[in-house]
Image 1 (cartoon, rainbow, N blue to C red):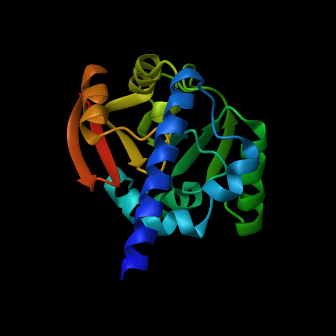
Image 2: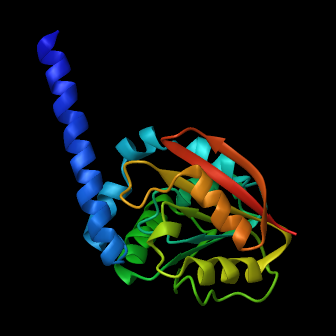
Length: 210
């Protein structure tokens, strides 16, 4: 029993030190997850801890929607969203790294997915007309963006009236914010909070463009 308690203590201490060190680094240096990390981000282990099914449901994604994912990376959740919206819908998968988009394209080719369009772009200049999308979602991405206010304003621009922004976070992520922080950021950007679902470790906040 003592050995078990000691092991838990070491695990907790290691996790705490990791969070402190990596947060100090991230506070001073903003950069996206490197492309070689794509296979880790897109893993069954991650989706066990941050369920794809729950994420899609909590985000409010429905069949036939036109959806954009900001910061899709290698597509850990993109194909799950594409399956949910069906052939009548469309997922615009946006990332600033072509190598991440290439990994997503390989997955699309392998699974013969046709309703995803990978796009190289940044969160400050989304390649959509005003009020053109039903929903925009971000998975452990919002806090990686240096100017979050500008990115949220751009997302609000491209959403239709009544459109949804869904922000999902996951505690092991070094940029993880408290639920209250995410809600404040969305409110400040002019979104009405529609729902906040999940728990301390992993949650999704939905905001509505009024």
